[in-house]
Image (tube, rainbow, N blue to C red):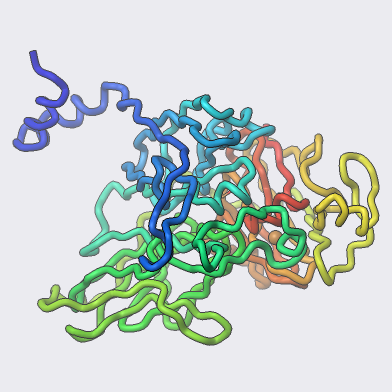
Length: 464
Ligand code: C2O
Ligand code: CU
């Protein structure tokens, strides 16, 4: 009898795979693998510091990198081995609402010791991520996130494909432990919980050896609670290929900086132009000053230089552009926060003054309502085009994330910008997005500055 393991070994070591693969591999159910959310200790700070206790998927931070072909299935059993209930959200994926992972809206939170079966098809190629969505402000800050890469049917012309997850942590500077006060009202009412320790893939000295002329695909993910990353290249010549998973129609040369709000992603193609023996960098720009976010030491030897700029990545399927003339108009007024103008808003059906809101540790309101309401912001019919004006009447930036569907920003000249799932809006701005309500279900729409989400900035839309 042939065991599955024998089969795998034989299949991968012979030409057998290419001839029988499509039928043999398509049929069986994918193996049920587990994803365990649990406590662990990792060396996050430099070696002179103690290990940091984190919560991570399979005890790692970031969690395991999940790679799947476009149209492939993701099947996992989430096991909760944490001291509190959890849930798992697939950020940026146009999937079945039942797999969206929002407690109280799409499922119950998964209790300690319980499990949840994940099974969905990944419709779009691109860079996505998964993270806890129960008490996200705490659970994501403790490390419950990872990247999901959905591969294009044909491999783009790059030498390497690397995921760089950017995050910051609020660490005690003696013990290197994650600050466990997740309810600080200053964070909630201002810019959110900002860390004092910044790293890539959980490595403070993240570095990848490269060779001159190599073309790398860098999949950047901002997993921070509140930090906006402004990024630039040094010794690298690059293009923005995709934003929030979705390919740009034309690669955009990255000569200046790219901004990533919490939850946002950018796929870059970068050519190594630094000389052998030198180091290229992904640079984080903070108040006009540059810091190393990731280093790329240039090793001996070189790849063949590509003269051309990269071809665009293939578009994802069924991304019909919304018909603006027919679109239903909606408006979202964002108010509150420190230095804001909000005088009062409604919490659990009762009007509260801003002072009463602050006593309840709530600081923000969408259209005068604090946090989740029984009725959705809008009930949309399947296939309906929508334009949604977002008025940021606060003193702070917010990263507004729509679950389950991507949208375009409408430029001032009326044209549609690139597809995104998270809009970074600054204090005082009025911006407008448009989308086709093509995915049925109850979809959260919230600020991805997670302390803001937890203190008022959360609503939802229903598509039926
Ligand atoms: Cu990345 Cu509602 O989440
Ligand atoms: Cu916000």
